[in-house]
Length: 210
Image 1 (tube, rainbow, N blue to C red):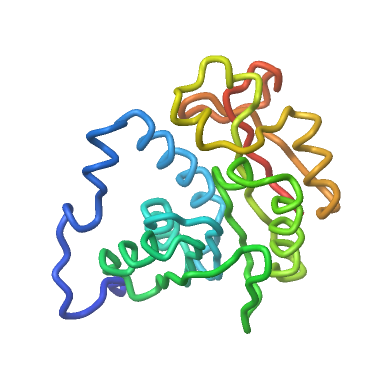
Image 2 (spheres, rainbow, N blue to C red):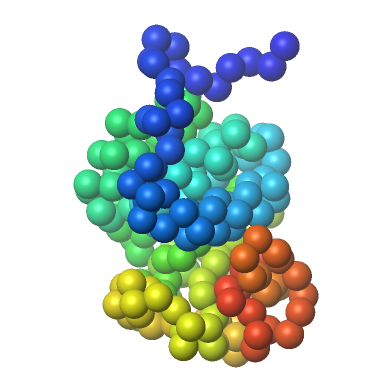
């Protein structure tokens, strides 16, 4: 029988786990986030130690925790981490308030996940985040980095346009990642579909970085 990953003595309800405010405001956007995390989660091994950089309130991080041994979610927004910790019912999942540009940990990670993060910061901060992401990895580990394609910005919501500091073209994204990783594989992603189609027409980029 599989050992339970839920904390003993903590009441677990769907309402605690799921963000109904986000769902009510933007149900399509919420399921897009979950589809991106599903892709990353399926790449993890059961024995992996994983970090989710820019985890927000931990909705996607919780999904990761069901696919690996241990997960740490970090975000610089203290309010988001407080919410994530209040909802957390999993023994193998912890949340911390931290700056991803200089976060350090005693253990190295087999997998670094950072989805919908780098577009929210200036390019130099994104470089610092990616540099540190590489340093947090084990020698055989890899990172999953996701960000919107700037070509889709003309169709984006006002909220996206306001929140994003800098969005990347395919060539810019590849160049940025290759500054820090030896090998980069970039997939196109539109809605829930990840593929190798023409990058210029992708809504979103999903990169595997080694």
